[in-house]
Image 1: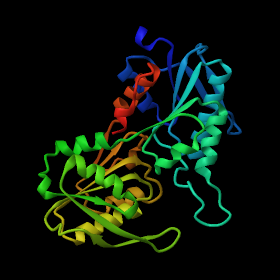
Image 2: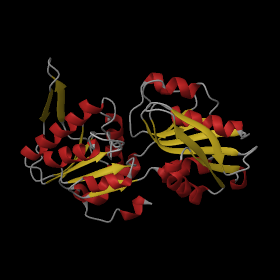
Image 3: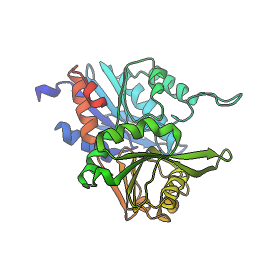
Amino acid sequence: MLMYDQLVLLSGRANPALAAEIAHYLGITLGAVDICDFPDGETSVKLNQNVRGCDVFLIQPTGPNVNGNLMELLILIDTCKRASAARITAVLPYFGYARQDRKDMGRVPITAKLVANLITKAGADRVLAMDLHAAQIQGFFDCPVDHLYAAPILDDYFRSLNIPPENQVIVSPDEGSIKRSLQHLEHLGGQLAIVDKRRASAVETRQENLIGGPINGKTAIIFDDMITTAGSMVGAVKVVLQHGVAKVYVGASHAVLCGPATQRLSEVPITELVVTNSLPLRPEQMLPNLRVVSVAPLLGEAIRRIHRNESVSYLFD
């Protein structure tokens, strides 16, 4: 198709199902690439098609296994660069190491910047990311970055539930997520509440107070960018339940769900846990109340517009 002349879509092994959905949205087939591991753990990549002069998009979230998926992305970039691709865009539905974006104590690295350097030095000409843990990470890359948000997709799902705005409270699980919660509030309506989260230790947080109210008898929707071990999210759920909400919904862009996350989430009465498919979910993570919404149309539309040198700014909203 002339519309996608010279566009090549390649996928690593981190989330091939999402890559296939994006290809279906664009009406093209995924590029042919062989990826395997040598017995000693080294990654081997071989392109089985010509990418010379092509506009290549590499879809590879750097979620668990973080280091393995990151290294695979770097090798894919180098492979395309040495095969004379005209432009290489790293598509990162989830960007690992994003929380290590500053020095919060002495003698620690800023690993998010290190990873950004690795991606650009490997040969990426631009980056397409979604819901970075901190928006300023865009500035860590020495190349153009298009930063998308899954919020409109999550909002569409919750809007389909037809919860009356006057009976709805949008909850921020901590002070750092207030801006995100306000954006959801603008689109969904209702009331805002904030959970007061305090860090008890390096590995433990404590949620005790709720700012805003009363919320008794209302439906709470708690939004966060990611759920990793679920400690903070479960703590927030318990707080709003203690304040008398009738139902609790949870929405998150990235379902990292590592360690005790699945067990913790199964132990609290969440009506629905709504996440995107930015990361693949294993069968044991598929809780009965888990709902997955797809970001393939969002990423696919961004890829289409980048390839055709059209504006993607409206997708940021």
